[in-house]
Length: 306
Image (cartoon, rainbow, N blue to C red):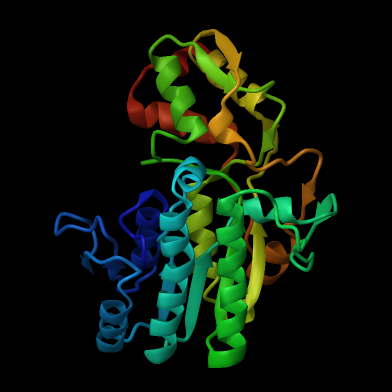
């Protein structure tokens, strides 16, 4: 499991371990203190990665390693492309050489910005003009590499395009984490822009379940859209967090480093394929997920929601 020491990777690793699988983590931040055995290694170290997979010969590879912070990608696109694109090619090449039966790739809902229609399913093609952000380009490249390795190396791949993820251990830059932290400090909650941009926040436990289901035979060489159970605006999220903490103030400001980011607008993203083929659906609502975070943090703010 590449990126298995990160926020999402730890939960995916835990899910596979609970289902009875042996897990080996490949991550630059892996240490012996991690909950699963592993190797401290970058996915861009292609020779070492190929040797590791050839020796361990896993049945499947979960590829989650990458630069996931869009602002970091915007600030240093060369490094991001090296990790996200070249790193993915290195993982796929090593997996093909080791006879891996399946690679499940962490994709992103950001690719929807490179699509023309308002109702999006997995068959909608990418626009040749792209979507105006380096991160989006790197995510599209990952999907195209998966298709190429399926055709040219016979490597079965599955791509999971998922909406913004939150949950235990989320990194501070995520909007849910930032709002909870700011609310605990008394506010204000900072909303970038007018706050009308919408997101379908997905709990990491639901996403981990999707990764596990994506190893099924039916998922070979398929792409799946994964969305949270409810779409709400950034403003609405801020209002819900504010209410949990007794009504902390909310402010708005512009942020130029966020230009070119994902725009949901009024788009409808279909998750029917994942539901039909994988039997997957999100079960944790945003309100339930927020209450879980409050309980885990022991803030006592949940009393304000009663």
